[in-house]
Length: 338
Image (cartoon, rainbow, N blue to C red; front, side, top):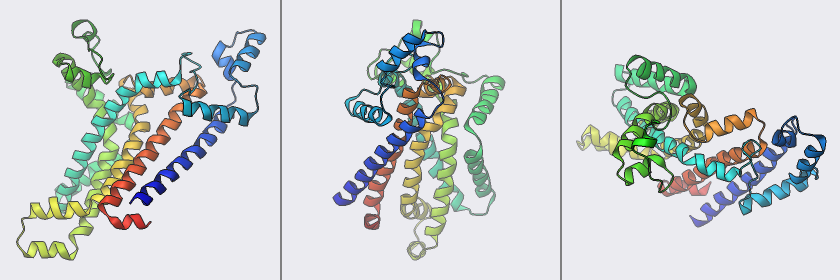
């Protein structure tokens, strides 16, 4: 198990290093002068030349790469060309809101996907099974921004039940301000007993979390259904039924347990997808996470920010894949042979 874990970890590190080189070279191919973006298009040529030297853009490309690589390991990810602040500081400010949204979405996806998958397989080919498969296909195929707009129209425009945008209401800043403890605003409102802010935050969280959860929920429901149908045809399931075990035990314990390895894989990779998929959701719902930050950075050709968010997403994907491999190896020892 230790050899398997070290092998997977080494592979992830090598892939991440190769990715840093690819991303670095691709950002340098963008037809834009970062120095002009930094000081503005109306700056005098001598100012542009000075900023170009300060940013190290006049050095050979591979010298710039190794300097950037050294900065990654020392915590210097560069300064945002748009805000003139360190990129890591910008990410640290916005990342908690994104992580709270992802956590809520993945909780909905895991609970809903497994439940719908098991319910579908109990009556395969029936009306409930068909309805669940239809919803699963819709969740996987519908673009997140379009689903978000539809939910806003229905729950906000027609029913007027939920807030349309934002993480909290603006009035809370004056009536029930949140005391920062961990910088995770919703969690901080819970642990400090600020129930007005916590309830308001939950209301704002519902629609974006459902929107982000639609794709992984549909994917997990289909995966659980497919894996359980295969398991239910095996001999030990016939034996369990012959001994008179209730169907709920057969489905929820025996069959679901054997379908977990493939489900864990889908869930782990869905977490990595959610980190990048949240960008569209955050723009639609005006969520104060890294989605809006990277959107503005792409418009402004802010390459330090683009590189940082790209590497952050890649690292999240590799970490999720690594955790999935380790969990699968624990569940099924045969995985360690690969």
